[in-house]
Image (cartoon, rainbow, N blue to C red; front, side, top):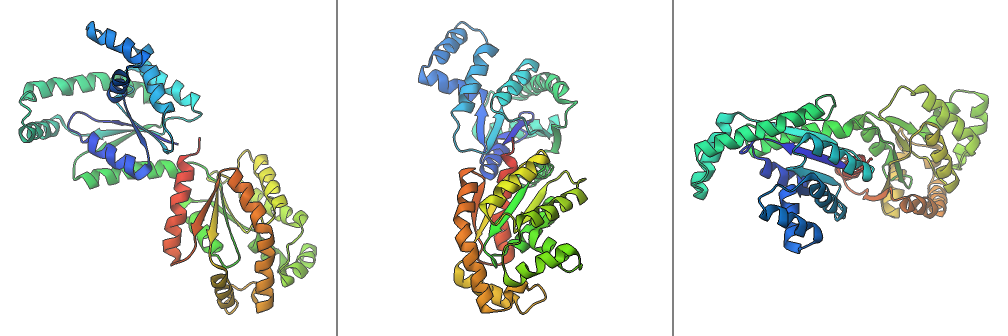
Length: 390
């Protein structure tokens, strides 16, 4: 999940940036004030407790606030994370938020601080007061609000200073310029999380192109079983003699051989902590279980399966065109082997798709169109998968 706190003095533009962040990343906005008003309006037991305190002139205590925020979090459905405004406000509430995240088996992603001078804030707030005829927003009131912000914020920054959660962003410029800076911080954070992707689809669906693009952009180790087999088949080893008959007929190479090649590749790239993108494996349900076991040995798992979908006729056209290039595979050489390859994949397709769909990590992606257009579709799903890593 992507969980953000947006800090900034009055007039920094937090409201505008919050709306853009919610829209771009499918976040739920959680404001202490708004959540409290909802409880009061609904007349809930919590709301009634809070009303008594407010009517007696007191401040709603953390015991009630934490329950109100907890209710707001738990009532969320379908978002990819949370954007907090007005919470936490104190050192104690910062610990409370950590506890709430622990209950959700997630954590705070980033605290974004909009940096802007008092002079610029005052200028903006006075301008807004004139435009909205808010006579109570005079220079003295604005000064007090800015002082209050800094008095409350500094202790919180102390709480988070020894973490890698804080990110200061220049709040000057147009709305889009500021959002671009915020977005850069978020993308860098997303890209820092290890992720393991599997790119799946029929022969000719464009798996290789899309998997390599993902590997390049997200700095992942690319693992293609077909390329591993092709490499091994060309080296004249004893293993090559076992592999070649299967490749020439477009048949599955025995799992014992494939596992050895994958494990060898993983050992060679053991220093990579960014993750892996698998292409062409698994091709059977048994291999899906095998891959789970291989990943478990490395204390990780497949996080997202991209299922690229292309109509059958288009697949045949693509494979026929590929047979005339240097990228051709042995099973591209004739129409008969192409059809046999597609039929063989079709027989095994449903069990693999159903396995990963049941695990809620498979997404279908339309593989038609220019490769860059398809990649944007693929990338969106991968980014969402990374955001949802707990």
